[in-house]
Each structure stands twice: as structure tokens, then as C-alpha cells.
Image (cartoon, rainbow over all chains, first blue to last red; front, top):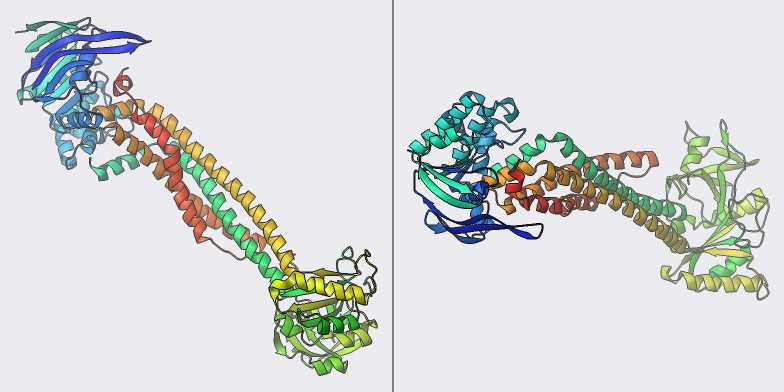
Length: 223
Length: 407
């Protein structure tokens, strides 16, 4: 599903080049559950943003479903994000002044497919929030907000779900609930790539990539 | 992209940010309302001014000749008229100036008591020649005007202006009744059709017409005229006619070269043109004010949208992450601005129409809505939204989703 070849990313900060990611090469198979582990500033987010087509690599090649997407333009990358990738963020990022179901519908607006409120309702039911459809984001608990975010990530039926510290802002039981849902999605055949520094989360992964100072230096199997 | 849903989501965004939406709308409304009112009122003022001038002058193809140098102006009374313009002058102009088609003779005065049996007042008295109706284009509503024979035989007949009729005969038919002008009795023979307001807004109907000869010999006892109205053969030759009349009168009055004229000539067309020019200058100034007000509306749109763009940075980041391209974000913010600007424009047009009606009523102008003004206002609203929305929208589109989503 994903193949990265010698991916590097260099930023310019105050006129000086800073390398956030150095010569990363790895691949993720369909249906994999991969954890990227690293402390903050290690290049973890950069890697995730490249994977999510929010950022283009400086050098190297990124194949998504066999297609080279490393140098595609904004519209093409947006389309890939819209139809094939679902994002789950550490701080949920639901739209304020917008109800749960409207948040879930949001990605449908930007995809070339029919909008279907019942699908959005199903997605909310899927994460156990059928009764919260018309609540505003601010009226939901952290765990509930993150589950709305997962429903939003699911709505266009993406093959890949990218989760950046999805349990980072949640208490233990909410976090566990979120992880359960992610595992269920993985069980349905969706590929999950999750960035975290949480040991407990790492322990649940089928495969762990370690990143340190921008170098993807190790790859280990958790079990 | 799903266009219908895209629009719905824009409307939802606007409806959930009411204060912002109202601010933006208000900015545009004020400008558009000002524009609508000022253009409409400007146009109806122009037309009303022309109408009132026409009311006063009847026709524009005339030259007005008054006695005295151009310094003495204003209403004539029995005492303050320069006696320089005589019946013989009138005959000379009528027969010797090639440009003159016909000439009306006028001897008028104010402040003369007029009485009917039950009422009294001081309408202006106009002694005129019998060609008055033909020259002026005025009409008789009831009865008839006096004839050339009447003028020649100095009959004492009076034709009442519409207001004079109301003043002297409020409850009865005046035809055949007697009015006493000064102490001289006159038989009412006709009533004029109302002419309406003059350029200053006053009535042009509070007057009584009598034969000019009767006025001269039986009422005022003076053999000079207060005004001559020369109708031209060619309305475009006003200046030529003025020169011809001036030459003739100077010769007849034996004025030495260099001496001031003891009469003055007015070309109503030239006066009218001057008034209209002045009016259009004022209109242009008002229009600039209105355009400035509208421009300020645009700046309000821009600043409020800019604040919105930075307040909604995170939202923009989320939209980008879930699949909105830069162009979609650009269009979204631009459409928001255009929607609000159009809504504001719509409100502005409604206020503008109401305001125009109000000002028209207060100023006694005809209510005249300029379709072009409404059309321009509509285009301007859309244009404002686009023009002042494009920079904020571009800024939003350039938002880096990664930065925006970073805590």
C-alpha cells in the first residue's frame, strides 16, 4: 500500500536548512497496523504529514497504492487525502459551532461522491455515538470528540487511517476505547499508521518503526 | 466536490457567525443605500428643476426682455420699475428683429388688493397681450382667454390663475362674476390650468391675467412695460437674437457707445443650462461620497474577513486535511464574502428605496427610482465581495495545514 524510497525533508529555518527527515525507506502492506515511535522533534510528525500527503518530500519517492505521489500538485494531493486517507489528530480538531454529524459529513463535501446523511449517522453509530448526532463539539467529552473524529476519518471509506497521538489527550479508559475502535477498523482490513510515544499503545502494534533525529533507524516486531 | 453541500456549508458557517455576518452586511448596506438614494434623488431633483423652470417659462425658445440694467432684479411693484421699456419698443422688436416669431407684452405688479364679493387677497396682476396662451403653451381650464380685440378695446376682463380662483371664489363658479382689482371692477372670463411650482418651489398660479392695455391705461396708469417675451423662430439662435434685440433697443434708447444697457436680456435656455450644470456638479460630488461610503463597506468586508481567516485558521487546516484543496478554500472564503456583500447590498437597496421615498416626500419631489441605480448597486455588491474578499480568501488558501493544526 505504501512504499517510501529514500525520503528526506529539509526545511529552511531562519535561512538555515534543517533536515527533519533523512533518507527514510520503508513500506507498509495493505491491512497493516504500524506504530511510528519517537520523542517529540524526532521527525515523527514530518513523516506522518508526508504519508498523509499534506507535505511533499524534498527528495526521494513516495508510492501510494503503487502510484508515485511525491511531486503531485495541491489539487491531486487533496484528492488523495479526501478519498483514500482518514486523519485522526491528538487534539481531535472538530469544527467549532458545528454538530457531531456535520463534522462527520465534512469530508464528503470535498469528495466526488453523493452526500448521504444516513452514512454519516452510520459512521457515528459505528463509534458508539448514535445518540450524540446533534450535539456540538464543545458539548462532548474528549473521548467522544475523538470518536467523532474517527467517524469523520471513516466517512469516505479510506484505505489508510493516519493517527497522530490519538490517545495523547485522553484519559486511560477513553484512550483504550479509541484504540479498540482503531483495532476493529484494522480488523476490517484498513491500514492503520499511528504515531505515538505511549508504550502501552506501542505494545499493541503488529509492527513498530522507531524514529530518532529524523532517521528511521530501527524496525521491530512487537509480537 | 459536492457543490450543493458546499453552498450549504458556507451558509451554515455564516449563520453560526452572526455578528461577523451582520457587521459585513451593515458595511455594504450603508454604502449601497447611500448610493441608491443619492443617484435617485439626484436624478429626480434634476428633472424637477427642469420641470419647474418649464412651469415658470412655458417654453425655452424665448428671450426675456426686462427694463433697467441687469443690476435691478426681483419682483416688480408699481414704484420700482425702470420706465425704459415702452409699447413702441415692443412694436419695433416684433416687426424689425428677424429672429423674433412673436412677442408677448407684460405689465405686471404685486401688492395690489383684489376683492371678490366675499374674499380678498393680493395675487400678482399680469397685464399681458392676447398671444400669451399661444406663446407660453398655457391652457384655460374654464371659460376663455381674452382676444386681440379685447386688448385693443381695453375691456375689463380677468382670467384667474388656479390659486387665485381658490382664493377669491372658493365655493362658487367665478365665470361672469366681478373682481375688484385695486378699485377697478373686472369681469371674470376664464380660469387657467394650474402650472405647479416654480424653480424656488413657490406657486405659479396665484395670479390674474388682464389685457395689457387695460392694465396700462385703466389700472396702473403707466405707459411702460415690465417684461417682453420674444419667441424665436429658431431656438438655437438665442445669442443672435439677443444681439439683434440689444442693437435695436440701444439705438431706440439713444444709448452712447460704452453706456450701460437700460434693459436686460435673459436667455432661459442659458440659465437652465447653468442650473443643470450646477446640479450635475453637486450630483457628481454626492456620487463620489456614496462611492466612498461603499468603498468603506468593502474595507469592512476585507477586515472582518481577514479577522475571520485568522480566527478560523485551525478550521481551515482541518478542511485542508480532510481533502479541501487550496482552490476550494479560496472559493469558500470568496463566496462567503460575496454572499454577505450581496445580502448587505440587498438590504442596502431596500433601505435605499425606502430612503428615496422618504426624501422625495420631505422634499416634495416625485418618487423616481433609477433602475440603473439598483442595477449598479447589485453589480457593485457582487464586485465589492469579490474585490475585497479575494485577498483574505487568498490568505486563507495559503494557510499551511500543518502549521494550522499544530497546537
